[in-house]
Figure 1 (cartoon, helix red, strand yellow):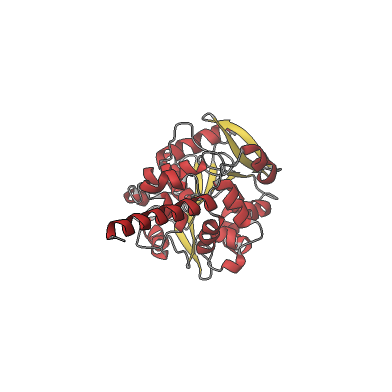
Figure 2 (cartoon, helix red, strand yellow):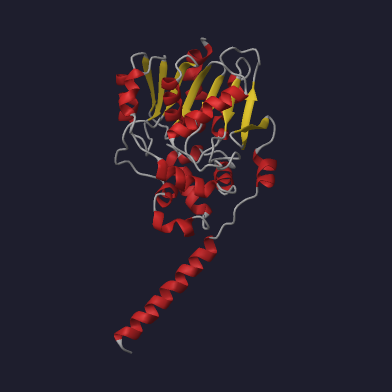
Length: 315
């Protein structure tokens, strides 16, 4: 057999292996109805904002003059705040939301996922809920949306809580495999159609400081909501539109009292960024959790909330 024939057969074998791998990992989009039935039960509601049916949980006393608004990170959902919301709602109005491109809200009709688009969305959400002033709490992407919203409208944001927040240029930290694939434009057609659950399991484990803390059904939730119609493409578009650290020089202008919470085992955003926030923001305190990772509010809601409770409850 000549070397050309060997090469041809090797390519054929490789093609067959790729087809088999793709077929084994093929995951169709999940329709909204069954997802709402499982992940959108009470107190979930849907309100129209910018042409989207936005998934919101709005709980606690309606006469609260300064509600607490909770913003999740990339590829997450409002469920990441369940522990915080359940505890805080006994005395405060608490609003959590699935940001455009994620969770049950799904994709933006305009395909806009820049920070500017997200801050506009926050203002329109608050207007739709008739909320004049808030305390903003954000994790990762939600943290950057929170502090940039505070800069744009300081009269509407009383306080900030930033949890493993984006904002500074990315360092050479590890990135979960799902985000790595979302960054690879050449694989987009395939990646929009395959989504092995093992990859989601690996990603979720990587962002917990201790994977043994992952509650039951957490991987199922991340997996199924990522497959909501349009969410995979939205994640790719968000990665394309991200400008990591482009507005970091504005952080020094933040005047609101700010609490920074950080999981020291965060594999994505280094603790040095948490310290930098409190160097740049004049009225800032930092609390570090040595055993926790990138989503400490979900990994250990009670301990993280204990560090923020007095800050949030003091209006």
